[in-house]
Image (cartoon, rainbow, N blue to C red):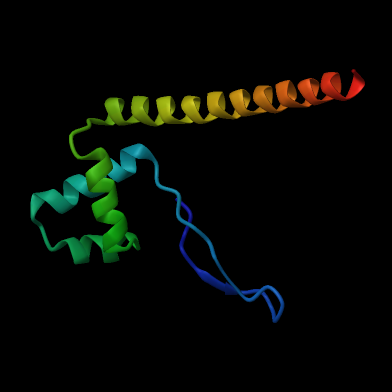
Length: 105
């Protein structure tokens, strides 16, 4: 887990924020802790250094998932992004070839 910190980088680059990267298992555990009722959502968010909006977004996305299902969902989303990128590259090459053929005749 990376820690969320504000770092001053100087005049030109200003403030930067290091983003925290939680695994799917960690997200599910944080949501489970929030659902137990051992405190408020705000206290769970403070404990893990996340915003309430992030907590509720995670709850909306991972509400009914177990850890294996959430991992599978994340894997499918990443595969979909990769395939979309490949399709866009292929379409760009196709367009470039059509332009070359059109210009040569």
